[in-house]
Length: 193
Image 1 (cartoon, helix red, strand yellow):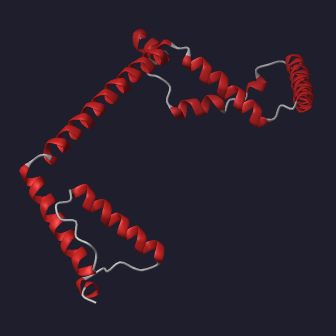
Image 2: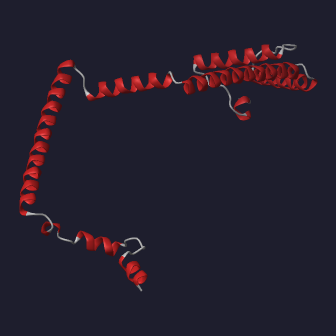
Image 3: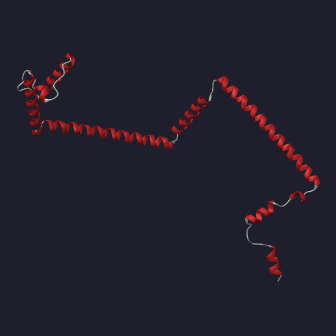
């Protein structure tokens, strides 16, 4: 029976919220003597005074700091720039940044080389295509069409001219029409004047 009484006195379960509220509701002022209470009140007043004094000193130092910065021409924007520059410099000196920079630089060089190779391949394909029978046939059809248009408009015929000559003469005629203010015909009805 003594074991049950001892166990009843020593609870093994943790405190619950309701138990904590009971503890905070206890009046500790009755547990300390009047002399201790007076000492604590004096210490409390001293601490509050010290905190107030420290706040005043801090405010004065912050004001002095602002005045010095103003005299030196340091404003918030300059400070931010300086902090950013310092942070950027610090970041650039890290090994992670250096490794990343090297990797991206290498990747950029590889991409540039790849794009250059693609450009060369496309140029070669266009060169091959220009010499193909299909392109020659297209070139002849364009040349014939341009020649017949020139004849209808009243221009001279360049029989046997190359594709470049035909394009050049068409561009020249277009430029002359723009200079003189004479619009070039845009459809078949205007061509037949």
